[in-house]
Image: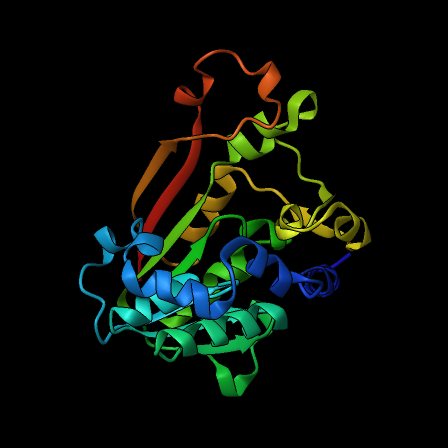
Length: 260
């Protein structure tokens, strides 16, 4: 198994009923666009405090999925590019942008195999968010790409599920923080589909990383880490087994800020 094979399987996984899943969750793109136009800050509220005024800034949202954050940034006047390997995600995102009255660029590609003519460069901000790192077999190539795509002084924002929550808490008795195996998993949006549709979905492949592995790979890319903030809010996978008040005592998310 190599990264190309892993990405190919995950790309298949993300091109099966994704558009329908987003409609089930948010409504038609035209309906969701009205919500974003009314409160554009809501879906990007965790990023704006680090970024300030994004008008005229170049932002790349890698593995940007259905495009809601890209559209929100565009509503604030940013020049936004999404890279994602799902054509169904692209369809929803572009219809969302059109309905919101903004333009975004959407590149359908494996992040690590972006065509030369679409090469990323001179971005003010690059964002990765919530459940994306596990699609990579190794992290150095990803963070080196991000380093190269940022302008000098540009900012990288990584907001992710905390590895302790993902690798230990949500795995129950199987939890092992140091597990390095590639695992099969359900495609993330499967919960938004009917049981019959979920049964028909292909699986995805995931490699879950420790916080130390993530931080080390970022530093090795040449990026300078400015802050690492951990947040409570873990979602207990086995609520009937959860000790009382455990959510308040375990990290569920983290946000890492780095600059070129």
